[in-house]
Length: 371
Ligand code: CP3
Image (cartoon, rainbow, N blue to C red; front, side):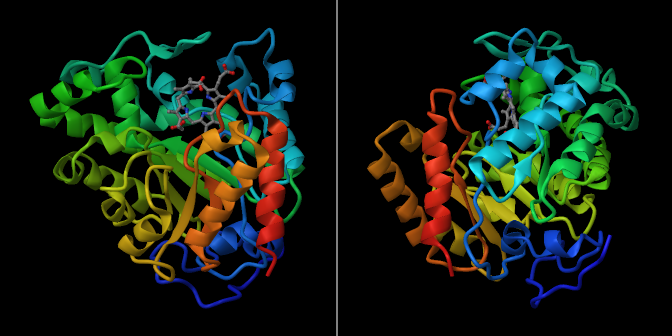
């Protein structure tokens, strides 16, 4: 693979200041990775969280007759789903088709996705003994080889200038799923556990971090050139709780990721935490719909310090085209063409979305931002 030298002054960020993994020149210079590094781009890169999924007929066809987990574990199928969505939408990055919860299964927690009910973990972790009974981190990461195989195949099928994003759930959000045994509204079990037995909480966080570091690095070795950490539920914490129960672990996770690979930290309803999240070492901060993109960017240090990703309301994809495109223009106006903006939704594409709307959005962002 030909290697490239950085084509612009590196950002102030600590992690992605050099082409350490020796990415190919087209990848290094891709719109998406340039934006992750805060460098100017010829147009604003765009991708959509949950860009491959049930809103697409192609996905529903491949999924029919199989469970969601079987699909995640079949590298040929996961590759097909990832590549199709990327190409059909014309987005600037692919994200590997998988789920954040496969890591909990690999650590020994039985996982199922019941139709319509969301995920269930039938042996919730509710005490210190259950934390200690979790599997060995290195073995768990090894067990996820189907993810690495899907990444290798996907990268082989992508155009040379389209990066693949690897991902994982953040230690807080994964712990919340493990403790609740599924999705939750108030996270009562999680908070009971966290406040009631901080020692066991920190042990659980450490076990997750020790699993997620080799997991993400194996994704990078397999070909992912960026990683996103989904902290979907961390917005339920106060700043004080974030500092005490989350910050050291998220910081350790980011510090363990191969240098030169940008890290996107994403959470929902995290406007009150974004500077703290950015302080964990993120190269890119994901901004959700409820949070002001421009104000948050400044709060995290602004352009030149960090890049931002977001933040169109996914529900706008359900409305009339004019309202959707006007909403996209508002996001672009908030970013104001400053280097380091990656256009995305504020959360994932919802399943009622008409795929044509998503495609029109991508085309619109590209057309509006030609520079
Ligand atoms: O295209 C992509 O973005 C990649 C694939 C991806 C999926 N899940 C596929 C999926 C990614 C990045 C995720 C991350 C994920 N999974 C998160 C973090 C992002 C977020 O939304 O906050 C969370 C919290 C999960 C856990 C999860 N997985 C839930 C709560 C559910 C059920 C809810 C739902 O939307 O059905 C899933 C299932 C899931 N993950 C589906 C897909 C395509 C639907 C499965 C199906 O086909 O029935």
